[in-house]
Image 1 (spheres, rainbow, N blue to C red):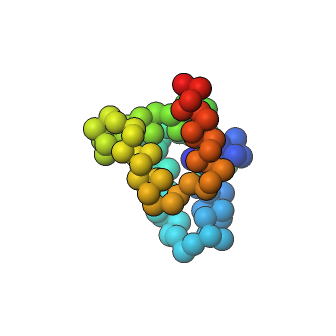
Image 2: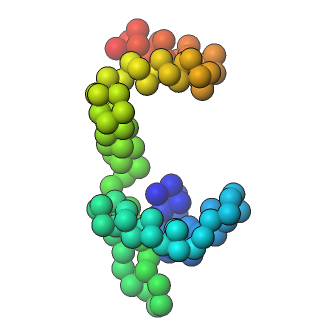
Length: 108
């Protein structure tokens, strides 16, 4: 999804080439994943030459919001605090991020 959002449109080959530079990944894995994302309504495709060109059906911010909400509901029974505590305890947040988070909490 990140590749499609960044490029606006992408073929399976486009996405594969981006991921290939980061880690070993089969072309068919990318193709299957994009097909699943299309089936779930996250991507739409159109034929162009001998390939399909995919585009996102929703903006990145909307999709991320929905995915996070779904994750919190499934993994943390809808409570965001355990997720935040996990991130803090696992040191996944820098001091600056923690300060920004504390500021956001105060403002909320």
